Image (cartoon, rainbow, N blue to C red):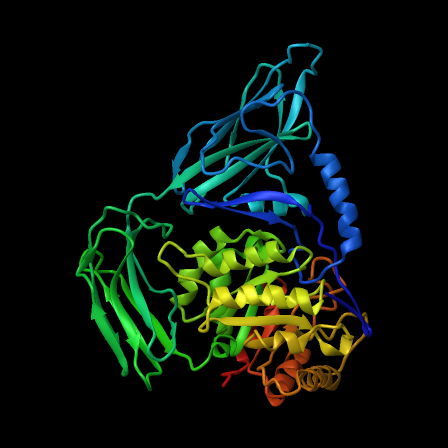
Length: 555
């Protein structure tokens, strides 16, 4: 959001309000309606968004000629569950070289331009390809003006081979070949490559409550971490630590299977599960397991935020390295905007790896609540999602910045709370109370485990002292607790590590380190359970070093 004095101006969220999309992984489709959102920061701005929607639909949703195969105008319903390897919309024909490809290997789309039956066609046609695993994400990027992928000129009667990016995550992938406002929809499947080792994790999470159980999941994997079925892997599991009961289920696995169960007994706090295999003696997994007293502890300590733009800029390996460097305890990962859950492939790549580092993953859902039931369904899709080794997110952060009516917020929160159950965290992301927005915090208090105000102190071109930032965060905590009244909901402060006045986030008003230190000190002195910074992509090296130095253990 943009902060100007006591007024908050939020950036726009361009995109279609009612585009049906299919989120597909491993051949299973979940259909949700998609509303696009600004990737680089949290915020909204409906009027400009409507203008962009209108222009986007006008330029991309055109219709020309007859329909054949999997041709569609942008916004139409798309094929689901089947693989579509060829499509035609006169005069353009698109065909995949192969319907399946091994992880890490390329596929190719052949594009041909033919003269229509009525003649009079141009000598060439410009064709653009869009390629990604999630059709929801592809549309999300499309309407935000993300780079479209290769644009090629195809001469009449001279087919052109266009290589697709090498995908490393197994699953179903989508290609849109667009020309003349019409999109041809193709799908291909990426299969696991040959096994090179094994992977182990605790599912659905390494964060347990007293008496709860986690599975020690194990699978043979290829070089990219995709489970490979049909490969026998002998397994040995042990636990280092007091207060945990280990039940071994099998001495070996042939697919992604639980090798053991681990249960936290009363009084247990933390342990390490050790997993080894004689087939891959160079590997040894040390899996941390921690017992929490309440879901709020999942977001206690230091947190970080990663938007889809952050994912695209850094990638999962760099994100995980940054989290480790900063000593982060929990990650908020953008998974949905409104009616569109687009993060299946993202969660596939980071959920297990974060859990194996002892980092909780919270799905971040921007909820405009213009269509409450659809927004709720998108949030529930993130909550119910399971990675290949059965990991699940540790909670959900509902980001409330548009429709703040208590009835809408309550309806959304009921659905989220029911899907999460009692052991996972529900975090409400709200405007800082100083800005005067009518966020129904008393209503939220009935559902959430934590409230996280966006305490973005620097949104105007002016200098702020250490004391200015400290008092801003301090006032936010005081006023929020006054509004909560008798509801003792824990609070996590969200600080900023980006320039809200620059669209890139990297401008001169990205807060200096002393301002981060002031926010950290105020959060700690004010009784917050933690502090997180938005967002990882725009952090400067000095900010990274400062955050790594902060010590915020939480309760």
